[in-house]
Image (cartoon, rainbow, N blue to C red; front, top):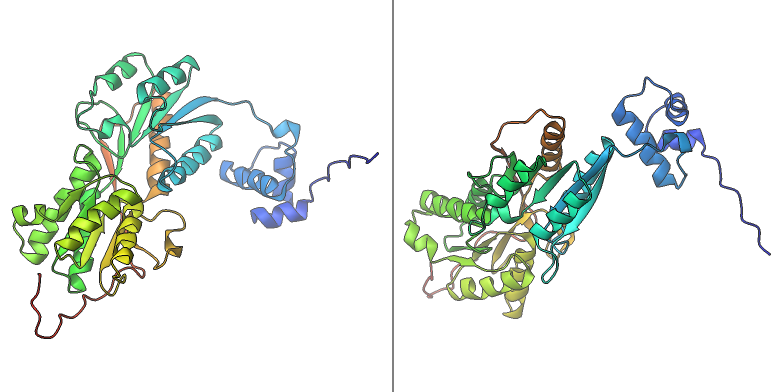
Amino acid sequence: MDRVSAPVPPRLADIAAQAKVSEATVSRVLNGKAGVARTTRQRVLAALDVLGYERPVRLRRRSAGLVGLVIPELTNPVFPAFAQVIEQVLAGHGYTPILCTQMPGGATEDELVEQLEERDVAGIVFMSGLHADTTADPARYARLADRKVPFVLINGYNEHIQAPFVSPDDRAAARMAVRHLAALGHERIGLAVGPARYVPALRKVEGFTAATAEVLGRPPGEAGELVRHTLFNVEGGQVAAAALLDQGCTGIVCGSDLMALGVVREAARRGLRVPWDVSVVGFDDSPLIAFTDPPLTTVRQPVQAMATAAVGALLEEMAGSPVQRTEFIFQPDLVVRGSTAQVPPRPAGGTSQR
């Protein structure tokens, strides 16, 4: 009969190297001594986890409470990216996150909130929820506030909801993308974006329309003809691309990286090459998006900063120190990769669709 080997005691030198701290610091953390900064302590604990060592019993803290995280779904890589940062920051403050996802046919946001309240959560983070839907009743959030449940809202804004909001500058994101394509010589630029009832989509349309007027001199009505509202996924991007390519667009701005991949798929289906025949710009800079073929030019959503700010605001709310009831807007960054290039030359003797 095989013997079960005893757990290998952690080696201070290995943990110190992984955490990039001294062995003395590791010793203080493992022995529960004071005088170690919280961030340093977290690095040592993370090193223990990465190296496969069990944490000493004395280091297993009781949870400060439960915090709900309500997100639409996990198929879009940007949502797990947000969830990971939010959970890390919450865990660093001793809170245990409860992840709730909304899948088609599954629990609604209201049902998830009811379940979280039954578990007596200390607060809730909403990511791209009904607060971003202009057709949804904002009264549900007022009722939540009346029940003294602290919450914070990410991606989406409603002036009738009294709570802290955290959003990227969607208008600026669309302007960056249009200016980038215009600088490459593209004049026929389209926008593939999500359903018109969502605030982020509406703001991207506003930024797109303003930028095409400013850079290309295109009136709003004409710009609107090159906007296609569809789903925020690969299939939605492909449907939008079919219409925009038929309209002669050589550059397409997308409301998400998944939509951009749909545009690339439709271009390939037509025998068009990205970026030589059509340039594509995504939005989010989702994990692994730099490794697509071609690597995707995209507007990076500042996930780390936004998620950290959202948790910070929620912690203040839970501590009884309400933060300003307003929207905190974070600036995105254009990340240029291989899916955009100079506009293709016009065929000799041909006519331009631009």
